[in-house]
Length: 209
Image (cartoon, rainbow, N blue to C red):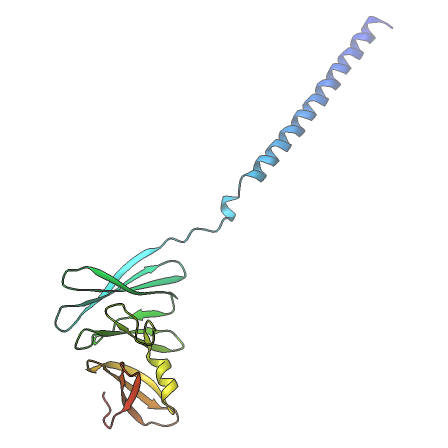
């Protein structure tokens, strides 16, 4: 074999070996990158952590100014967290109740929320489907039957037939809450007292506007 042919064969072998080496290196690099990408989570696909935002609180003082009801609200993307506190003249806050609701629902403090003796208060919960009212003890204690609050709507449906609640306007006495109603089938309007101690309704002869 001539020296020129030998040199050509050697050159071709060198080129072939170099090509195979480059091919193997490229394949190894792609494998390493694939494994690395699989081990790192896709940040765009992760669910975002909801950010909460504190909204301005609602406050309502008792008629004598000795007690205050505070409603704090914290909003995330889909929910509102409501927290009810009472405070006295020393400004110390006592947590009474907290609840999370969809943004379409709301808890609010009625103007006449406080009972005359500052022992009870009531709040309003509204949604597109219904409105309810809840009575609490300002001390944070449970009622005698060991419930945290009285659901005015549930009590009324349980004890009174033929009427539905249209409004709860305030207190007639320390334990008497005024509940306005309307006839289910008709235009008759009737006011009741809810005695929060006995959890009973007293029908009145006068309708309170």
